[in-house]
Image: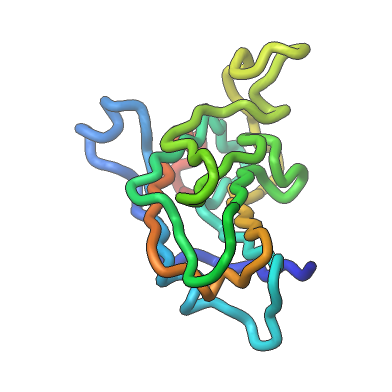
Length: 171
């Protein structure tokens, strides 16, 4: 199984006051077309793609990353699962532990932070933030089961993040 890193070109800038009032500062959406457009040559079944969602400059405070599955993903073949994990470069699922987003699985339409960064002891979603003393990125890793991501025929997911930029010159 190979992994391809992809930098998303769809990240919004700092959100409007209305969006900040709702609790998030950045958002990005991905559709099945993004996987088709970013398929590496020589890819095969079960290969993952990791998308860079949000930049975290030095001094960033990550309060949360959430997603909403607007349309469950589906493929043209016999695939039945598409796993999603969200983390940073130090822990690929430190923000969100594996969630199912394929129509043939029991897809989870929305999720909150339940990874190690936001867990105190064994009680998920009890941590309140992660401070970044070095630059990093929030990344989403997509893992298909028994098909290639370029075989997806539908799906859209929206990620939102609540990030405090203590050094606005770097945001």
